[in-house]
Image 1 (tube, each protein chain N blue to C red):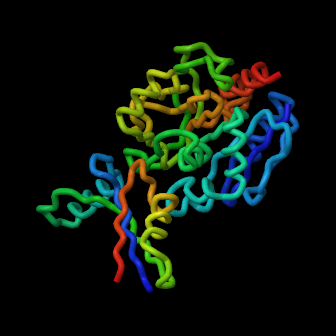
Image 2: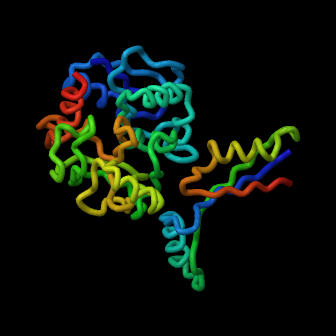
Image 3: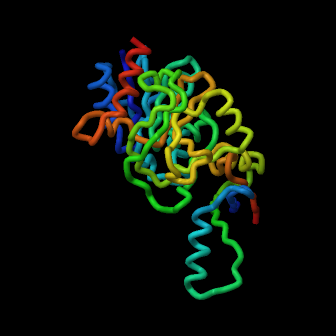
Length: 76
Length: 221
């Protein structure tokens, strides 16, 4: 079983990497892009017995830094 | 005096830190590998050095903060043992929950590696006794993720409780309120991005970092 975890910066937290990517996109000649935020995708292969609560605990204890980041759990 | 310097895979300021502590304080200084489940007995100081522990995988300091030795460091900090985290050590202390806030990518994206001015905000902690409040000192920084972030409520609390130890004299990396070093509520844990161990003798270009260690010695001895 595969779960995808998306870790993103909280709203209001400045994202210098997203800003740099935004500049690079504009440098390629694309216009009309308002903002870019960069995050992280973590794919976890696991037994069906690993519960959603376990996955949430993995997120809050390690995969996301709750001071600056949010996470979303997507199960196939 | 007895000190331990924690080594993680990817630490690279561990020896400089050990030399600074040994030379300036005369402490019997042991390097402790990250897999150690316990620390040597009777420690007067634990130092978490700079570097790129675990290659900065996931987030700077995130993996190191969950390593076995950090459980022992957290327990020692709770007992009041002084803990000094420099650069990656500061990142590890925030990830371990010993200090509030987080260290994000520098606002200017670039790695910053130069000597910067720091203002000593509080000289009442064990780590800052060697300085005067309001004094400006010169200490080098070398980091990519030194942009200190905490919500405004936390920042107000830190300021109100005198827990900002050092502030940058200029905007170095986008840190909230130019914070360069913070203390825990007990005052026995200090995290700072600048490297005092790299500024301890004339050949380094200055010795302002030396007084941090000398002040610690006076406090502990």
